[in-house]
Length: 228
Image (tube, rainbow, N blue to C red; front, side, top):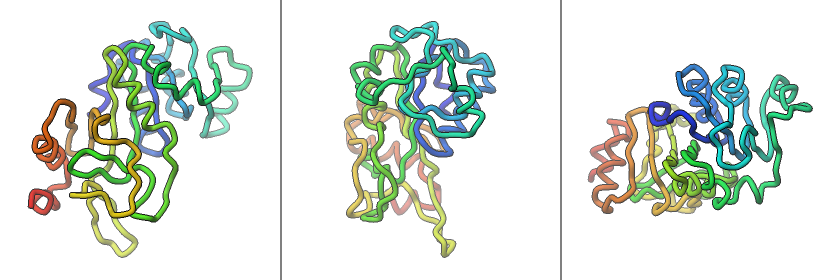
């Protein structure tokens, strides 16, 4: 659902976790070319894209030809790639995560995960209720910066459900965020929302249209409950 939206010459950011890495590996196997990298986090999937010849950075408006990042998290193979490599440029976070900088590159694409989303489009990426899971990272700035760039696209990607230790299937799409949950990306900023059941563009939709669109990509088992 995400890869088909990415154009030649796009400038990518991938968030932390298995999902962005999985999307990155699909990009490495695709026919997309001349990609750029402007990201907070450098991951193995970006190395896969580079080695597959997908990343040149030649269409970037700033930091042309450079894979720009703030920190790396991955395998020894990734760290060996970074070592003394002029193809990369490491910057402080107040540069990489400045949405005014992010949006200078055309076709900026932000791909991030989340914990829960409600029917208004609010995104929680940090907690389930008051149970703390993660920090905010650069999700808000990257998502907003990508949307602001010329031809940019921003994606929040979630599996529609998760299974508890007791084996109970739980929807990640909620009528409201679990009370106590932290809003990481507020609803006016959210562009594309993606699950395994499809993707919806939430921009320029009324509250009613948003709810219908979000329910359409929820797990079928929970759709009637969400409609109610």
